[in-house]
Length: 428
Image (cartoon, rainbow, N blue to C red):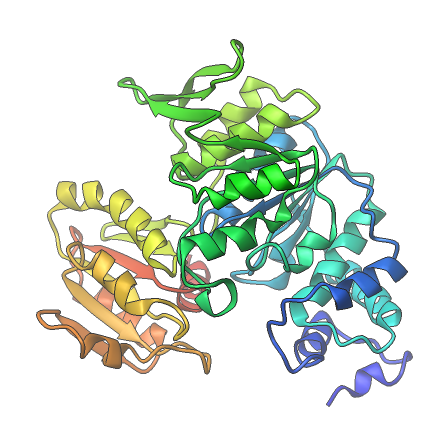
């Protein structure tokens, strides 16, 4: 199957490499740092020599990373960015100075990791994390921003010692790996804290075990509601404030164009701790221009169509809050095209959106892990539900049924948004 890897004479494509890495370890998720640390040591990636920011949390990690990157790039810093998962192509995951990299750079780095692993069975995420760190090592970067993949304590990104650690929020998700309570999940996510380094927390209702862990590992906890917060003003601006310093008041920033205000405030908290200055102009630029694929991404106005990769009740509540005022103005029918993974809390997510949605277009996803949406809705009554074998069929039907005053929300998973966004971009 992988004959191109048996001979160095035959060049492998990036698709070949990704297919090979995907099948290298039969276990998709195996939270253990022993394997990756062995290979990282061979590659001399630890200790990591570039100033680094590690961003964890249940929701908003990728958004926070992206906004931070945009602000720093506008300020002429050389920035590396590593996020996951990708929406359209693998190259989205690793960016250098705001640019995706050509395939040959990824291929060369993967080859380096392959030669270094010496039979160690890395998982897909471990392998590509090492490849990303190896790529960043080749460039003269001012800093690197890394998004935690899953949890924190045992996540592959946690092999480095970040200069700043971040938890955006704590909500119930990935219960099979992280636990079924916010307390248990907070323990896992706080595992990215480091001695005598800032640990920023954006969750105002944080489990207090976070404070205990920060104290035990001598981190500098910088928590919303205790050390900093933000406030909305009547003139459609907002204020970020640090309680402990008289000069820690940043006044009258414009509202973010598409980034959730909670994530924007976390970014300002990160900027507060950076050892170099960032201009106000660059912050304003980021707030007004940062638009991330698949995060409440508006792709049409008549009808109003928005795509969001959210996949848990916390994310559903955020989308509902953003979409509700738009729905009130338009007064049309609200339709949702939805597909979710079986390991997610599908029922609670559906109930969270219930009062907003008029018609549900439920579809199977192109993965063995797809949830059986018919089984989910059999538990409820009073829903207007239509079922489809694939997400594209559900999408076409929702569009055909819609008038210009209606709203269509595509939601539930990267697997749901990916094919529809790909289709839309092809048409555009």
